Image 1: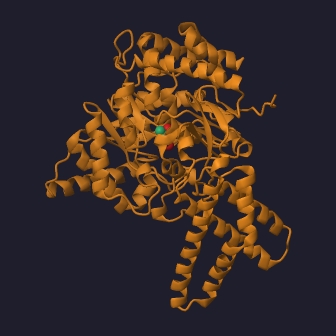
Image 2 (image 1 turned 30 degrees about the vertical axis):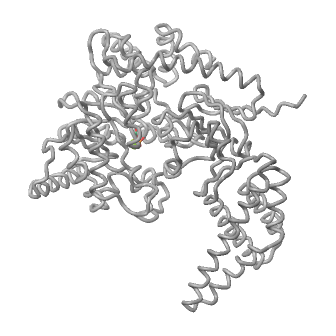
Image 3 (image 1 turned 135 degrees about the horizontal axis):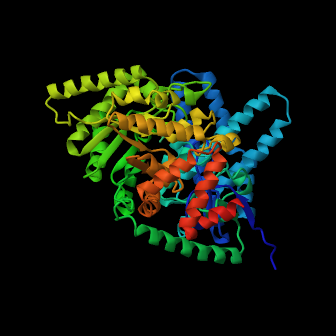
Length: 593
Ligand code: PEP
Ligand code: MG
């Protein structure tokens, strides 16, 4: 009997669901290819693929060299000659072919191994000329891999028959949207946390994901069978047949629970005593719009527009902004479409603005600070949003506001644009509401002052927690300090809600805690007006909401505010939920024990 090669790695489940599929390795640095095993019969075709890529690479280099020589740049042309010689190198070619034949792997994977081997040999040689050649070899191999991408992959059908799990160290927002997300069935990453952007995108697209696995990339080469359980936060590589059967059953059970929950999607988001809490969707991409009606969202509570700017060299035009926002506004009717102005900077670096080299990007030139520093880019977006307001119920949401001055300057820009549009006789909603994200502690503290000058608040707990508790939201090392139940956070939220309501404006939450059903009774007790979350979580939150009265929520809140630590708060609320929903919450408690 063959020995079991099954490996289990525990991580953090950030988007629920089970996938049984194959590993697709995504190397960081932009070049993405899948490392695959190939059947014996396809060896000649794979070698042919490799030779086609060699030919194309030679042609490319010859072309560039010709252009360079025509400009008299002989020194630079010499480097290309070295690349030409490398492309003829017998060792490189034979070694790659042998690996394809003997290990039954695709050409990309074979080249990656060749590169590793040559680099190791060169590493031991302490001579500058040789060290420089190491860089050349890397460039040549990268060119070959790039050109292999243009070659039809003969094994594609076989792979497509199975689900694809993307395995990577971490995924930047730019890399995530580079993927053809329709073909991705799951994500597994070494790094990341609940609020990292991979997690957010995965949840909003209903793709199961496990992050913080630590060693998933080191444990896979690509092409292996994999089970990903986003609910439990577990990954099984090369599972045995018995494990596969066990997970097939689990998958069916999960689908059943999901179907049951979906029954809540069309029902009103109301408590037993008739208190209505609007449940809206957070979206990153317009592709998510169909999820709104599927999961019962009352419009969009947060559209993260920064994704419009990523992964492209130019900037979106006013017309492009208008078309995207118009679609969102129309599809959200009769509810609000809340468009947040771009929150670029931090981990979402726009190449159009050049590199921003900062020691501490989370506290640097991001969000509204960058908007105000780049007024033309900001105005283009604002004009697009305001023009879209003629087609639905559009609200503007400003990220990272930290002071009243910042808000006032922004409102002045908005007023100027209103005048412009009036002069141009372009239709727009002159009363379109303007709200601020409360996600910087200073904004929470001066909520009374801000509330007098805006139409609504949306509390961004992801950042509010990270800044208030000084715990980087994407740093695994301090994730134990990122405590949504921390009394400081509960007090800050309570203060913001009270100040907002005192001034008669609506207050919502759009951070990830909005989707956590453990928080639902607390938010009820606080009297929040809106919770905005990934669409997928809406049915479960709605189910919980419909089983409480607001008065019960207030009682729970009173109790919760008595505790002095996050642990006590969470323990109390879990017990309370287990009592009321034994089937749904019992597992979390068992897992804790
Ligand atoms: C937040 O900070 O809570 C939020 C919703 O914004 P983002 O996650 O995009 O920073
Ligand atoms: Mg934020």
